[in-house]
Amino acid sequence: MSIPTFDKLLRPILDLAQREPVTRRSATEAMAQHFSLTAEQREERIPSGASTVIGNRTGWAMTFLTKAGLIEKTEPKTYRATKKAGPFLATRPQAITVADLRLVEGFEDAWEAGRAKRRENARQEMSDEELSTNSTATPQEVITREVAALRSDLRGRLLQTIVDQSPTFFERLVLDVLTAMGYGGSREDAAEHLGRSGDEGIDGRINQDSLGLDQVLVQAKRYRPDIKVDRKEVQAFIGSLAGQGVTKGVFITTSSFAATAQEFVARGSTTKVVLVDGQTLIDLMLRHGIGVRVVEQYEIHELDQNYFEEAD
Image 1 (tube, rainbow, N blue to C red):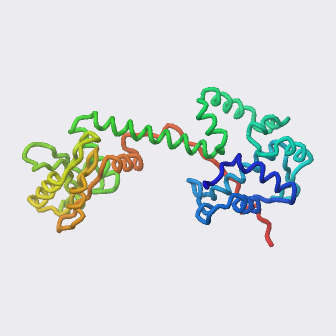
Image 2 (image 1 turned 90 degrees about the vertical axis):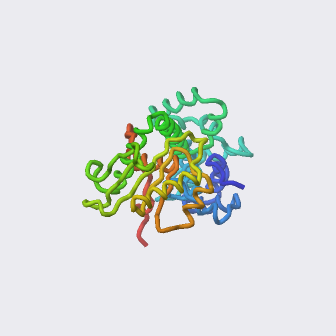
Image 3 (image 1 turned 180 degrees about the horizontal axis):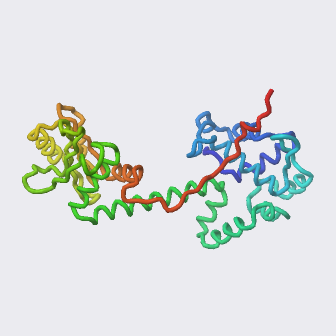
């Protein structure tokens, strides 16, 4: 069984709050036992790492129940069911949904009006499948999913844009990425774009020191995703390094490497070559801000429960 979505926790948490006082910690443990979660599931954390998934979803379920006036804080960090809980549970013997809570008088008013309006507008634009998924996801999970979708879309567009450029542009882009990573210092002083006849297939050279005594040679192949770099191309690159008396090289492509090419490099030799495929290249570009820019930044704050812990 997978970790239940937060709406599945509404009914058992409200039942628990009718029987005894609950805290977020005690409710989280109770839900883990109620749904027979494995030790691994109990420890699974949300993407930010700030809390466990079950703890995060328990917290949101308690927030929704509080907004509906079905549980209330009776003392620091402690909640109990209100008088409204009994009649509400009696009419919903099987489960409680977010839609049920929206019918409770005062629930919508408990949320900030502007945010509720924006959420409703978004709901109207969603498909039935999207609406169903979002109704069982916490707001934080919705944000995480949408950010992941934006990143995935950007990665695809970024890679396609690179493929659409000229080979010369790609060769220069590769040098920009490597120098941004700290190889060779500055782009102007340490990186040289070659990529011309007589260069033995070498597209760039990076000086690791000011005198150029230690160099890294670069090969850049702008291929479509379906064309893999094979062993022969990697072997030829290593031969070029040896011909120029260099022992370090980086082979970068927009596509990927055939298994035979990876195995050949993994065998090891006096020449050290690193293979960078298209997805790794995109990772490096995003990490170092090459070809992309930040258009929006948001901070999401979470209550620091440790701050409010009373000293023993």
